[in-house]
Amino acid sequence: MTDAPVITVDGPSGSGKGTISRLLANHLGWNFLDSGALYRLVALDALNNDIGLSDESMIADHARQIDVRFVSQNPMDEPSIMLNNEDVTADIRTESCGNAASKVAALPRVREALLQRQRDFQQSPGLIADGRDMGTTVFPEAKLKIFLTASAEERAKRRHKQLKEKGIDVSLSALVKDIAERDERDGSRETSPLKPAKEAVIVDTSIMSIDTVMDKLLSLITD
Ligand code: DC
Image (cartoon, rainbow, N blue to C red; front, side, top):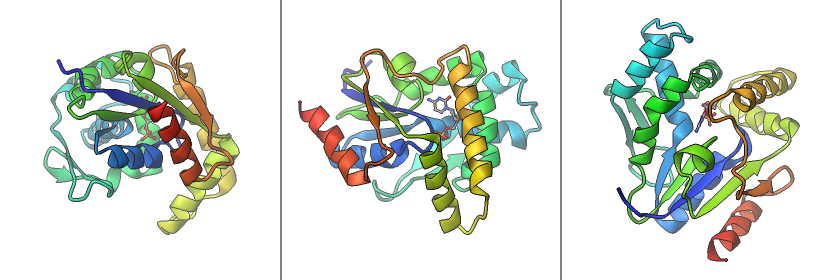
């Protein structure tokens, strides 16, 4: 048990929380938990082992046992993500792995299996925890809870730009539909649905630059 401070940053994909959380962790010199990557790793492991995405007990068993490592050379770069000693950094970021992650994330026993793994990231001098239920379920005692959001259109545009930069051509309308479906699944599941904690500060990033969001969050931290 540690009493290192935790700041939770929850919100839907495309709200900017990945970029912002990493910047914040780097600015403060704190540890960083990318909980979405854990769900993606569990999904990839299920796909690799031909486990059906609704086989809750098998996926939960694997979620407890898989060997996961985040290997960082430089804190500002995305770390290399290792699954059972294999570098899967690119594999977990595909749209199909994201969709599979959203399905395994709806299984309560899988969420339960990942709980302790996530809490183990709470170490000195502090933790920025990025996800969907960081403030509501995983770190209910967090000292500051932030909920970042943005319109589905804006989030689809950001995703479209990211994919284009990687040379991946997907239609914007397909992305809007995909994001809306994923929001619906993440927001309506029974266990830990995507919703702000009661005491969370909600920040709509639709028309904010990254710098403006950072200034806003730093002002909340120093308040
Ligand atoms: O943030 P991301 O896109 O990498 O997350 C992948 C999926 O995992 C997403 O559909 C929601 C789910 N997820 C979750 O249910 N709870 C979390 N704490 C983080 C992610």
